[in-house]
Image (tube, rainbow, N blue to C red; front, top):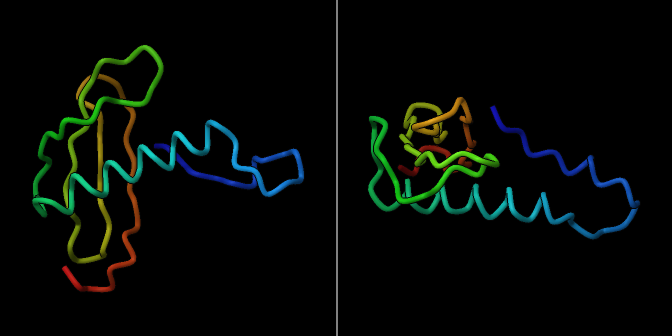
Length: 90
């Protein structure tokens, strides 16, 4: 499961590393794709997996009861859960 941890920025500055920017962009793509259709079962998106060397496609589903988005890759074990912070708006 992927984790986004900005505490790994070790240069003691406010700069976000390239890896952190890429992960934030990947997460934003997942959220955007999921919020367009509100799938309650895993549904394939057009998003490529962000794991190096993997050609898989990301599938997502909305976990409405706890305001989270689950995602997984079709080829590798890359997966995760994103807390949406929607507080029951969906």
